Length: 395
Ligand SMILES: Cc1ncc(COP(=O)(O)O)c(C=O)c1O
Image 1 (tube, rainbow, N blue to C red):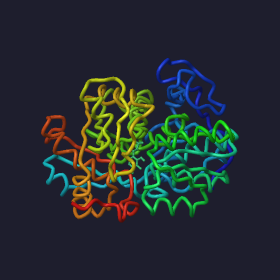
Image 2: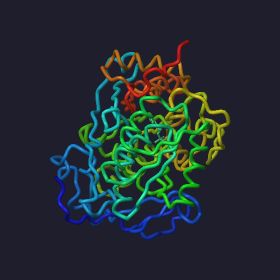
Image 3: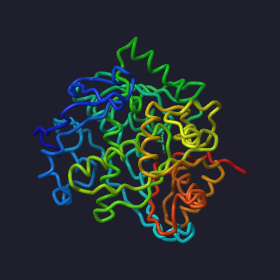
């Protein structure tokens, strides 16, 4: 049960490009220059009470970090059991890959079977708190079902626009969760256009990733959890399957918060983006040394979460890779599928193809000298393999 006492929430929102400050207690999407907004907190004031010891005995969900989350009214915390997913040691996979230690953060165990639950939990809770009446988003699939679930729990209608070839289990799930689902012959970017029309004409509140400030706040909790679950330290490397990049951007933000709070020092894991060979705008931009990424034409991969040809947070992803000493790598669909099987038989985790992609990337990252044999590596399995049944490519 939640109580109705108030939390401090964010002090303000900050434009990630210009640094300009904005009032946080209003429904607001992008900054006036069209860039994502970050929620900022009074970390100096929180420092004394919000410590690893203080959170250690709290609820096993992401609300254990409520002081660094934007929801002020506990009655608006929409809860379905999100977060505090297992961090599973994969020693057989580590031996196979030739690295010291491998952990799998199994995000498939979230409500609706993917890490999208974290972001949408926060975005919907905030939309509820700030008075939005109808929610909408374009999705590659998993974000849509997470939005549908949290919308249903909050009592708010949700419109989801997805590509027609979104995995069938996800379409069924969204319908069962009461969402209005529109199927589009096209990609997530085409779906975005339909949502924008609904926003302009019907007053929908747009939950597109990084186009409102709070999905990233939910996703950042993965970093706090890894820190706690590793016994209050960070790994050498994190490998993250990247579409819009909200999780990677969120975790990078969380490390700065954790340093300001005195939880960690200046150490950071090397952050790695993995994308599909058939849709790798970040990898291409990374290899060319660019600070933003051009749209990828003809995006194709069975890992629907990675079929994202362009990202509004491209510059934030590339900045995190650069500042962390990490990098970016593309892998083929057949390699993802193969590593789903290998990870499954090594660990008992039935990973989404996006999760398989993280393991598939490690040998290439080692070949390039970006991951060392002595490294301890966290792989993010961002979803459950059950959602992709029937989609696996046959060689
Ligand atoms: C299972 C899965 N993994 C990874 C991603 C990419 O996530 P992000 O947009 O945070 O980069 C998605 C996005 O749909 C997804 O569904």
